[in-house]
Amino acid sequence: MEILPDAAAVAVRGAAFVAEQARAAVAGRGRFTLAVSGGHTPRAMFARLAGEDVPWEKVTIYQVDERVAPDGDADRNLTHLRASLRPEADIRAMPVGAPDLELAAQDYARSLPERFDLVHLGLGPDGHTASLVPGDAVLGVADRDVAVTGTYMGRRRMTLTYPTLNRAQQVLWLVTGEDKVDAFRRLRAGDHSIPAGRVAAASALVIADAAAAGEPAPTAA
Image 1 (tube, rainbow, N blue to C red):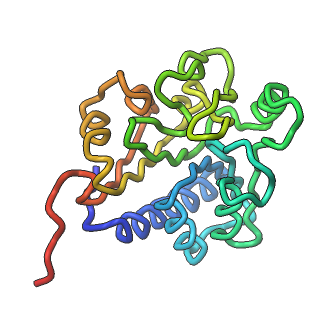
Image 2: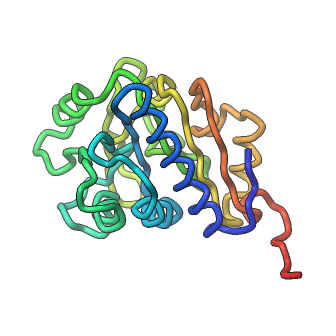
């Protein structure tokens, strides 16, 4: 676990870590598969990642979750992902514009690697991660790698499920903001009563800012 001064530092460190993992995977296996979440902190990380030394031609990026909204809509994680990353990035978008979302989720699941090299996750104030939100039936899905949620904050969503997340070789958590203090405390305690607490990948790195950790912000010398 790493606690950094602010969200900007988290974005810089997160980008460096993703780039390191990409280079190592490509050197060892010839490919790197990455699943990414949405949110403000990862947008800054993706913008930083665009300037890192990454072998983009051997990197495939998948979505952890996506809101059901039209292509190009500001609510779509994909919209911001495309705007932040380099044009040559190979992004496999979740098909949330399909007329049959359940069938589309099955199709997307078939396109996934058996095991992601790295999954990036965030944390909501209510303890959700990906679109695994409190009280939704998707929390109990154990036989599908991709599922569709009920309405949450005005939108249905498509999301990777626990089986997929927990098979990942590594998870990178990015957590920022004082509104995450309680959820972050519970995540660190391994509290399974929040959705994020049920993610159990083999290896994880948590990078948070001082605000999320409930620590005083550093002052200039």
